[in-house]
Image (cartoon, rainbow, N blue to C red; front, side, top):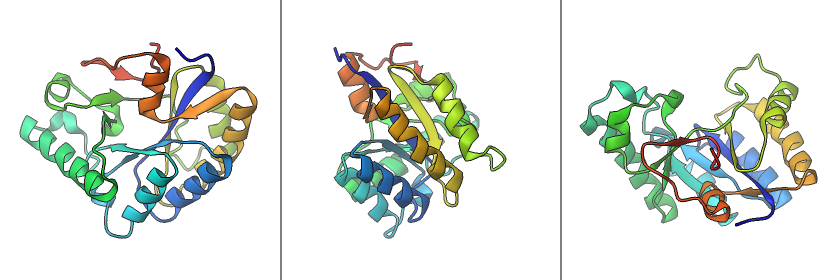
Length: 206
């Protein structure tokens, strides 16, 4: 077991060469790690560079589907195509297949659990996909929820500068409060938790 408070900082909807890179600048500056839940259709020969940089910094690349569709409407075959395509693209770019999956819109059902052989991850967020939520409000909402074992759910989609500003406040404050930033994998490992099927995790201690 780990004696330090742990938190997994995670980002959805990349990769790109703007917001993703700005987040990586902060990760590098503070010497921390994070996990990026990427959309397969956003991966190309250029955006692969962002994923490769992330991995060099000790971060993980995880699966957020191919098309960011509400997969509860899909057949098992369609689900496998969404997940397989993205996992294949990730492995080709960084040499590691993802272990974790965040369902688009956090929409999931039993068929998805039965079909997708990855651990499902949710997280506590701040509606940071909404431009009307200020950077300060995003920061405040995360700080109100944060606790040991939590997954922080944010978005690094193109143009999401308010989240970059929020993360600039979030990282030093959480470090000051004694938190250690870890990848999703390490969050489970260092907490002594084995991921279970038919479960979607927001906190490993749930």
